[in-house]
Image (tube, rainbow, N blue to C red; front, side):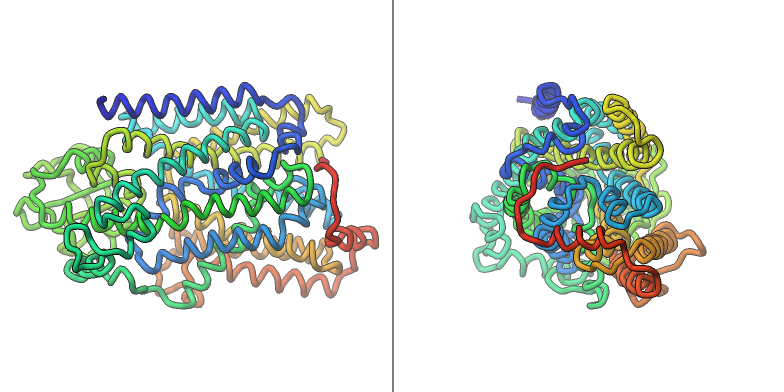
Length: 593
């Protein structure tokens, strides 16, 4: 069957499944809208949590960024998986026992202050919108490539789908939709990885195939081959890192504690009946997440070798269709600098390697060989620009896998992006309707009125998310990493101290969140978006990149919180008793709101 028709079929079936589940499980109360009624089983909740957390950054972008960064890309694997262990063991059971199903609700009640609640709502919105920007970019890219529509049109279609099941079903609809999305995305990630592993090494297990010998040359190890290819082209060795140790530690720590502070993941532990079920679902989620995460490095290696062997020193006119398909989207660019008609892919042009300084395309001009012309090419001899986000999506095409595998990958990409987008939109919706309107502005609002407010807030959030999809700020993984940094800088200290430090009071928590979030936002805007005078990597504070600065801001948050709390009144005795109680390992009832 024709590849395009298969893609429409696979994506259409998956969308019909999501919409059908949303109709079947539509929310009829605020409890169902916010926490799915609190009755989801641990296994189903574990799958939904995995889908919610493994966003477009995990599915589309992580293997891509590892394929370009090599050893340095391990920070994403260590940070994101380590963070989930931290969340499952250190925070989730206690937050579940506290019984408040949003982070602002926990902070508002634990720190007995509407000011603390307001700061937490602001932080939740900033984190969620930063995170959702990456998801909507992923949606637009996938739609534009695989369904052959404009990127903007693809974002609009994605907005409609998410809006339908997020607004109609709330957390109940999202939870069961995410169970289906997990099945789709993990199948779509593993099938091409197994195919390519067999093709390149003869080993059907990708994570073992990555370190195996090549099927075409049994005397050569695949990683040695990749190191050799990188060295020949002037890149750093794939298996050796170039980042400073302090930056590696900072990024890993920021991703870890950021994971533990993400509001759309924390809310997942309130959709189960008991604290014991929260612990179980955390364990299941980690298992489901590990399936993709231990495979991603192998996918990165396979895609990098395939790319180099396919494009380097190849006549442009002989390039297969996949190259021009991605070129037409502006996600691959080539300019024939030496006019020989061949693609020179060399490691002397950092601006060509996807560091955020993307070459621009005028959208019309073609070179003498028919190539898409780069408007602001680097001064290096490197002629090729490759967007990191295409590596997972293009890999099956580069490897010439069957059309049905390519169609499956398209469905998986959309499942990953839409599942997380829905979870984030619900956080935004609940922050507005529950934490602002119900808890602060209009406490006497009826349940029906609160449900209407929640759905209207979700509509507004989808519109803003769509704007970010049409005007993306950068690579999916890079943008998502900033969201983790924001969560680390703002929420993590307030939550940890709220659970384990009875003396922590509202003054300390508010000051810490303001300082942490303020520092992270300033650093991100200065060094990532070049505001406030901008700056280069040589100007980084303590040698830490924007992706890792959340760890530094977190320490300032802890420091300010503890110092301020020492010189201000202690919390009321009833609050201290609550803190003592949530640390007692006993059962708890259903989530309340």
